[in-house]
Structure formats: structure tokens, C-alpha cells
Amino acid sequence: MSTANLFTGDLHRDWQTLCNLWKQCGRVLGPEVGPLWEMPREHKACIFFAERYPESRQFLMERLSDPDPLIAAHAFKCLIRVVDIKPADIPEPVRSRIEPIESVLHSTVKQKTLGEYVAEYFEAYPSRDELLKAQQRSIDWQLNELAAYKKAKAQELR
Image 1 (tube, rainbow, N blue to C red):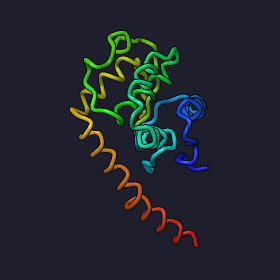
Image 2 (cartoon, rainbow, N blue to C red):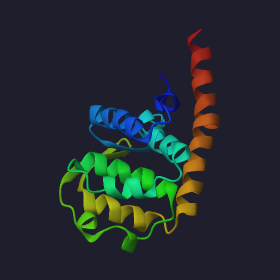
Image 3 (cartoon, rainbow, N blue to C red):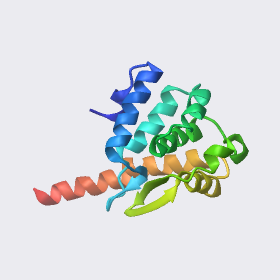
Image 4 (cartoon, rainbow, N blue to C red):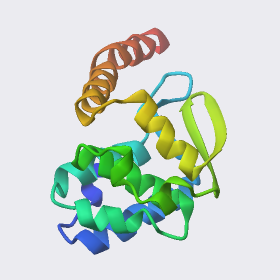
């Protein structure tokens, strides 16, 4: 089942489905992971959620306080795709959360606090537009270079 097929149109039901997906993984995955830098479905789910529920700002702001820091981190990943948000828009108790999470980018696994994870986003992306440009570059990579590589490898195996 593709990630896009996880959505039913019921915000709360879809959120619960995604929470289950993210909990199974147990990490916050970046846009490109593994030796081939593939976009994992857990990351795609955040993109699709933002596309499906563009008016979900308040819902996601509330989820930033989820007791599970992994779910709060994914709420943040969705939120930054829904609205252009600044550090002051994130409640101080969220920015100072110290529960650990694991994040993965490419093949690097890092343990950090939820507060550090949020802060690092604002350091990396001055605006939502910058995030969306980087996201599009990653998607283009998946559709072009990575697809061509996989096709060449498949032909090699024949």
C-alpha cells in the first residue's frame, strides 16, 4: 500500500493511522535515508498529510504536546509543511522538551532531544519556502537520478 493510500479524509482517523506507522519505525526519518538515499514512506506521510490537510495548523499545534516525543516530532514535520512558522510560534514548553528521539538522515542516526530537533529545523530552513524547495529537490532526485540508477541496476541483473 502506498503512503498516499493511508488517507481516508477523516483527519483524526488518518492521524491515528500515521501515528501507528511512525511508531512502528521508531525514528524520525529524513527525506533521504540509506545507501541509495531513498525517501521513506514515514517521511512521505508528512508531505501527504500537509497536502491533504492544509488547514490543520491548530490540530498539529496541539499534537506538538503529545506525550510521545516521536509523535510530537512528526506533528512538527507536518506543521512546517502546512504553514510558515517561526520559533516564537512554537510554545516554549515544546521548544524545551528534553525527551530523546532518534533521527535519521542518509545513513546517519542521531539521538537528540525533541527541543533540539525543533531548533535544528529553524537553523536549517529560514522559511517554509526554503523547506519546500529542498523537499522538491529531494523528490526530483527520487524521480530522476535514483530511478535511473535503479533501472540501470535492474538491467545489469538481467
